[in-house]
Image (cartoon, rainbow, N blue to C red; front, side):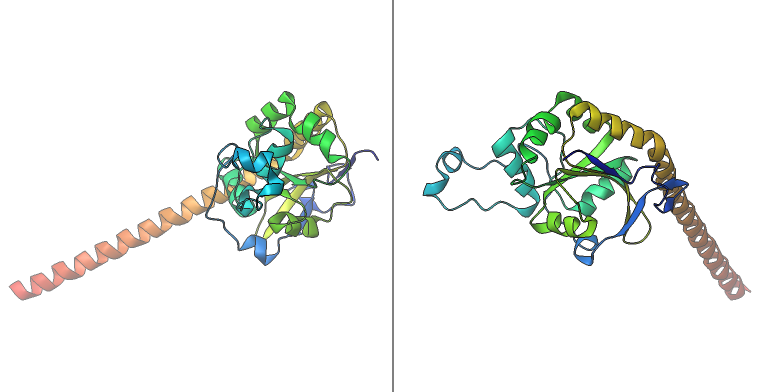
Length: 246
């Protein structure tokens, strides 16, 4: 099976987003309303050496849901991989918005036959690691549990490995700017991500900055309203004092 790409600007049957073509997806309430209290990244949570060497002798370690993907990945493929935030999907999306970046999402299917080569050769490639760390906020999850399962049900990938480039949108929606399904080599992945950034990233960066400017204008307007009310109150107090002095 070869790589399948969906959601590019060339897909003329896709809806338009800010002049580009992408897929708008409504998030389920369990994703949109859920915020985790734990956030981190690689190498912060480590099962003990004894647990790794003799798993059959012990109960499986209790792994926080946000760490499940990183722990699973690093046990099999090591610690060389992009900077994946160990947090909820919405927290990662907020980080991406704050940093004016797009989100790179990877849904991990440990048992899929294409997964080992993708993880060991593509996600662990220095080219991919450097490019993603410099340009994207990365979030990963296991496709059959927790938020990974919810995102898989929402985006309905036809195959794995499954990667997507995501941008925030109005309400409880997200914009899926690019969708990659199936095996892909490092150079091809970077090329697709670079093209997506060039074609669509600037438009969504402008949208984010526009929202920030709108919030700033609203805050300035509210501050001016408060100052005007305070000045009016001050005038009333001065007027009452003048009446008393007469």
